[in-house]
Amino acid sequence: MNTNQLRVVSVGAGFLIMFLSGFWLNRTGKPYGTFIFTIHKLIGVGMGVLLFVTVRQILQTTPLGSIEIAAVVFTVLFFLAIVTTGSLLSIPISKPMPNIVSKLNKILPYFTVLSTAVTLYLLNRK
Image 1: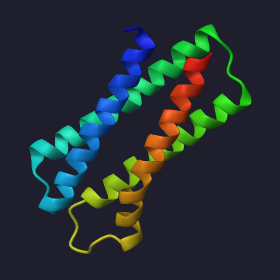
Image 2: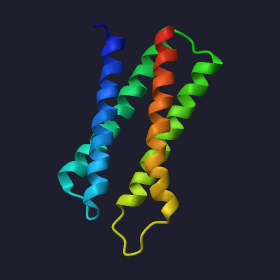
Image 3: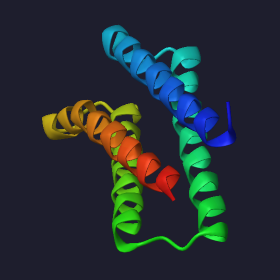
Image 4: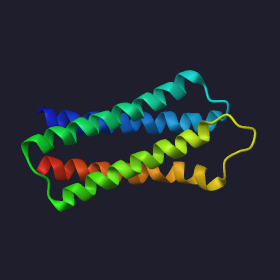
């Protein structure tokens, strides 16, 4: 297995663990358990770092076209949106967040997975 295949498998496994821990967090409700909450957040940060390193290494060897740059930008925006909505939901306040924040946090992961898959495909094509 080469490095790029290993990265794709790692990202896939990371998304799987993040989805499962997110479903677990949703079922347990607030206050979130420290262990599963920490795992959920660390996997997300690790995947963000892995994607950043991957894009950076590819940029050093090959210039990206406009389609690849757009895919990377959308993926980054989706990651930032997930981190933002997840952070808003985890704030321990007496008043709950608006329903749109919760709905976005449930929908955006699917867009992020799709965007990440497209980005990795486009970057590995080079």
